[in-house]
Each structure stands twice: as structure tokens, then as C-alpha cells.
Image (cartoon, rainbow, N blue to C red):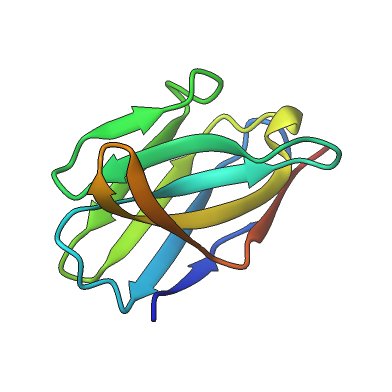
Length: 120
């Protein structure tokens, strides 16, 4: 059973920084991807950043240059360092673990989400 526990959300003024962490358990799959998605009120959930088990990253254009994703494979954690935060970054951020069976077949697991609010 895959379990994901997020931490690090909060409220900051524009230009501030936050670091989100996600601790995964039950994830003994060699080929997988971890990452962060976000959902703002009234909007669909969108990809923020992902990192594969081989270390390849994918960063949304909306956060590129401001957000960095990293992972500690030994601790089964993935982190999202968010700098230069903007009000439009306000959303619930969800940790995602994707078990990959092939390029077109996977299973997604989700954390409960953590709120990030950027406001003056």
C-alpha cells in the first residue's frame, strides 16, 4: 500500500519561499516517477514538477526558474523548493507517486494535499 505524507505548506507574502516535502512508503517499485501537482480554486489539477527514478525532471513553464524538485532515494522523499512565490501559485499542492508499467500504462497515488497561500 503506497502512502504519501506531505508537509511544508503555509502562507507567505509575494516573493517568499517555501519548501514542500513528501515522504513515501510502500513504494518498492524500481520504475516510477514522483512529483507535485497543484489545484487552485475553480481550476483543474495541473502538473508542477516531476522527477523519475532515473533522475530526469520535468518542470512546468509557469514555475521554471523559480521551483526546483529533488529527491532522496534512500529516504523515499521528494522535495519542492519554491522561490519567488507569486499570488498565482496559491493552490493545494499534491504529492504524486506514479508506478510505471510502460510508457502508456501507469497507476497514480496521491497525498492528501497541503495548502500554499501567497498573499500580502
